[in-house]
Length: 263
Length: 197
Image (cartoon, rainbow over all chains, first blue to last red):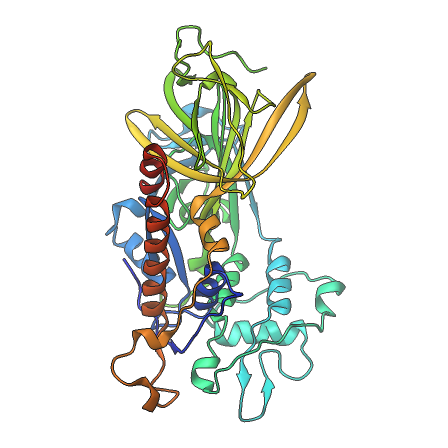
């Protein structure tokens, strides 16, 4: 599968540039026809370019079997295992929910070299005039998130006073195409603004980034915490560890779809 | 504490984890030679991947801190593996669990030696073999290659091509070059291992 991007470019590599740099340059600006970010995956030893929106829609429709990473039951250590419903799943006792990585995300955005360049006014305008974190947040709210979503994150002085960013060099004089420079990278970073879940479990052989998993977290009375944990999560990373007598996996996932409108 | 692998595993190819046999075929490869390592050398393997890159990376830790390894087929015989200085040293790791097989081909980024429980251990830092090729190969690529006819008369706008189409074609070119590079001058086993990724 190879997603179609909405934007065009003209590009010529040079001999000082590795193929990886050239491919990264192209991927940085590739977004789909609905302005969703595109991800490159290697599945079954072949490469795929997939839109994050298509991944989620396919997951809802259960269209692509390979994109399901499995069922996981989160078990509170105090909870008796007999109380858990019988489901075909992997039990997980070691898990953490966190959202503190948003600061890192914002730092990435503030320091990112890619800013929209307005050729008419001859300026980069992603951060507007004062280049503050407030403007960045407003920009994210206005351009990338739905109206119901708010970003209430605690920021520190180091981040909020950051006024530095690197500009880009582009040979492209067309504003309609140059405005896409790096947009995919920025959108990818926004995924980290949503709640993240990480857990450690027995070795899961076939889990892969971009797959969706189902988690079950049962409580006697459903509460905010259980509501958050239950449901579908997208895998953003894994780490498999084999030793001579153990195999376990650490898996990180996110609910980015809570940030996106119309899903 | 880690237990030693089962005695009933004379050729040293599998580990027993949670009552299940997991077979490992770990082979050090470069253009000059290849050595399949018996599992007796194995201490730990970490493989990780994240959403922002399709390339996996990890660490393989083995007991033998020298470059002289027991041979899998003949456990009593040892053979040197000479790491070549160009950095083109690879490890193929095939893991088979319940007849489901996964093959990883890594290049060796770095080796270090550490001491654990009084014994020296070799830590081999590894990354996806594709990544090595992509980082080190340089070739000219231009979107004009994807245009039809006389491009000299086209406007800047008409010279542009769809980013994802361009990306796909460039990627195919890169992979084709990688495959051709593999076929030229490599041993049969190396070709087989690298062509499988």
